[in-house]
Length: 289
Image (cartoon, rainbow, N blue to C red; front, top):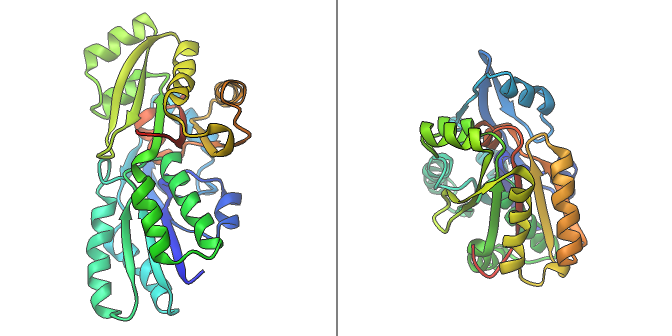
């Protein structure tokens, strides 16, 4: 690999996959119950089950961007080795992380004129960002150049499809995604929203479904509508501490679409802060978002 591939911890990749893909993952920051934590992919600072139990108990986390100084430290440590850097960033439609990284990259590019430091806006979140990074890393491991990988990203970024459902509307309300009245009425009626990430990288509610099982099935319904050759592609499935629901979706994806290569992992604390425990998210390549 003639360049270093970096991303941030909102990619929600499993530690084993991060190691296998030779990725550098920059941890983002969150706080809960008066304590600040870095979100490392192995969640060693705060166990992920403990985190979601805190949310279930009514605690509400806060999330924070990486400081410019931390970006500089991470980028410069790679540039000093003589390597170019491609950093695939959390969607600019959800966070200012990409903007901060771009500002730092511009400064460092002037200091290291012989190196390339590219900040690439994934316009993706959670396993969507992770799946985009996964494909980029596989291409790099196969010997593709930095320009080859960038060309693939440009051609496929807006075909990286995200479908989410949440179990508790309160977290969407607190994050400003739905009104308080909608959260109250929806909770009383057992309404479960189905959401996706649009072409601008925003998390957008798409439909309302009555009942948890129906909402989970709708994720797979949407996949059947747009997935490109699903039986021969890699699919990511992430969940916020609800493994049985994730297993149900995985079984549906395998049975209905013939998918054989599917990877399941947790939704990390940064994304989980806004979607809440019980979130299930499905990611794949499709004809459109």
